[in-house]
Length: 354
Image (tube, rainbow, N blue to C red):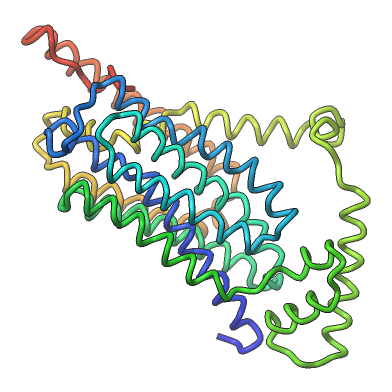
């Protein structure tokens, strides 16, 4: 790697370990739910309680995201990344020592809190430290690590115990905490706080250059950008009511709404249980590995496909493909439910969870 970008790549790698932690926490339920139903844990938990365990990560992510915005502006991006390790460690402590479902609720909410903080601050941090020519590469690296974390959890989850899998979520935040301890704060944030000398020092670290003239020119440009940003900073009310933002808000909200309500989140988190009840003859461990590998591979090739096909056509094809696949999952669940009801009225199918 070029010497001038060395620190930027190292900082991005440290941050990507945090991103990997969020995916391991997110996909924890896929291999764990079959263990609950096979009584491989000491926790007695009902179907409705399982649904709460799965769902509690979402409000945690919302809370963490909102908290990270304020914390990162007040204490800095680096401090926010370091602080996000605490919810993961606390949450895992609850999960490991859980004897009642409500302890799992707290643990999953804490994981969501840490995940929301990481998701929010990571994009800001990378955009503020990376040079334009490598910004896309660094961002792609964090996406790669997210997919790799998911693959790792899905691949090993079925072969290890509940305790071992949960201990993994103590090791991961400790690893990224140590990795992020030495990363620089963003010069952009330091300039906003009026710490010009500190911003200059961190900019020299990130650029790998000791050329005073070049550093001063870049610092001057950044100070100008900071002043412009602070002058045009807008409120949430202006974002929602301003005509210039209306189309972008509608498109963004529409895409996010369809993504969430397409069912990808519950299907991914209930994947192990869906396979377990599908009676398809495929072992849960094998199915999870296949799912994780396909997801990982698609994540690798998607940037290439996007550049060749375009964003809009790819979105349309993705929605059509998702529609067909969801129809197949729904039909299978409905068929299994009818068969189970005929054979045993007390049997619950996957559709009762979804």
